[in-house]
Amino acid sequence: MQLWDKDVERKFFEESLKIATPEQLFYVTENNEYVAYWPKGYKGKKSTLQSRNSFIGTFTEKWISDLMNKIVIEKGLFATTGVVCPEIELTESSPADVAITVEKGKNQKAEGILLIIEVKMSIVWNWKYINDAKEGQKLVCIGDFQTHQGNPGLLRSDSMLKAIGKSINIRVSSNKASKIPIIVITNTPITNSYYEKVDNIKKAGVIQGFFSVNPKPMDGLDNSLKQTEGKGYYKFDSFNEIRGYINSILQSEINFFSGMKNKEEIGRIIEIANKEDSYEKKGEAFLKLRR
Image 1 (spheres, helix red, strand yellow):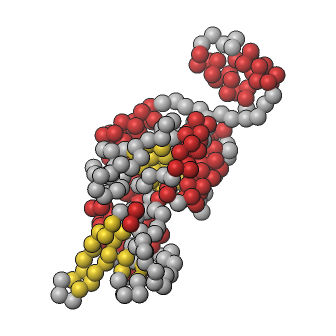
Image 2 (image 1 turned 45 degrees about the horizontal axis):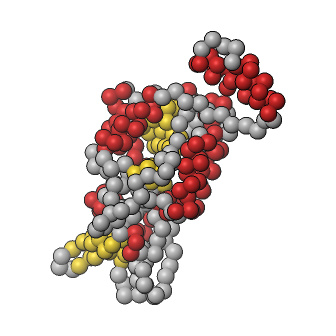
Image 3 (image 1 turned 30 degrees about the horizontal axis):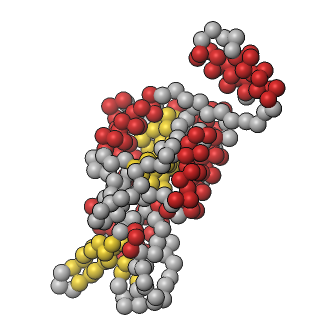
């Protein structure tokens, strides 16, 4: 399966134009041109376009679900959009964008959720929509994200903060969430100011990684970020690469733990846990005492 590219974006617009008007999907310039983003240097009147958000949100979550199902189908697992699990704060109003589960269906128990995926994707390239009387409808790519005024995907601070906030809410909701990995998937690089932050978030165990599924978000010589120093952010370049990662995280048994304790309390927990006769039992005792 191909990863995110211009062909996928073209497909989004072609499918969406069957159920939406051009005005719901594109900005309209003073010259009556329909564009996905305001081009850099455009100084005419501007409007705010919110209507496209629901269309691209639905499309990208379904696209990620399909991508994950290609990976987990052989394991007898399911990737589903809009998964609800109130015991870990995944509600009807704030479900998991996508989750990999043991059983099929949107309503899940925590023990049946193997991976939670937050999807923060949007249109990356700029597109012009042309409806010519002779040639009909056309979509023309007019530049990558460096050529327009929009900040797509995780290049937006609010998208980054929403992903972090929701993940923290899941993490602190219940001990049942401690064994479920959480990842954030985007189709853009991230800004320099978040390099250290995403590495620290991964190190703390709140989120297991911020991942891009867009191998070449820039036209021409693509020198977009491959990974941060601590791999808190990582760009997948092929389906096999992301398949290997997803399979490895599904096979791992991880536990999230955090807290603020004084040195005496920490020392007591370590001393008691150390009396167990295997590393696994020591780890189990440590986690139980920490709670």
